[in-house]
Image 1 (spheres, helix red, strand yellow):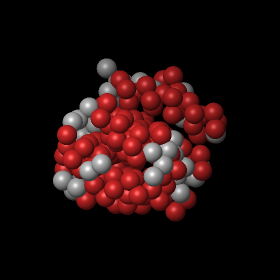
Image 2: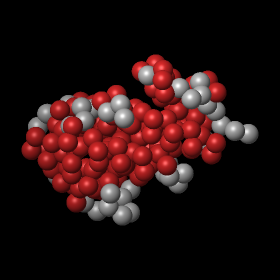
Image 3: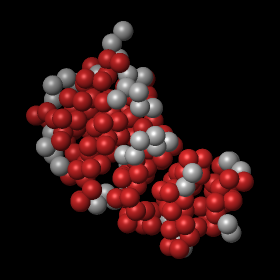
Length: 188
């Protein structure tokens, strides 16, 4: 299969799943996908990002060695939001290498604090930060503060995710409570 041609042939869920299934657990095919994702034309990168998350769902361990390169790609100017959304979506549930925690936390705090970042990326970044804070408890207070600062200007999806994260933070450490999770909602 000529992967790039197949990616450009059709932009649909059916095609995305078909390509992800073709990749399966094959490291050589996965490398082809990653090379297109990291070095392809913008439309190829955008579509490959959707295949990436579908491929992750089929065979999660393949992503681990690629996390550093994906993080570097996400910091390039003009990276399509599809790449950010799908990578941050994967980071919500994949095993994050300890060596990457700092870079991931920094990126996620940037996304969380930028009102121009799409809602899905910001909501997923919040979940990733909560996961990191479980491993690095010093981040809990900073995460709580960041969430409280952005809530007055946030969309309902962000507020909903924030309530869940705040409850999780409160449950993990009652000493961090400054407001109850129930009181966190968008100001009128």
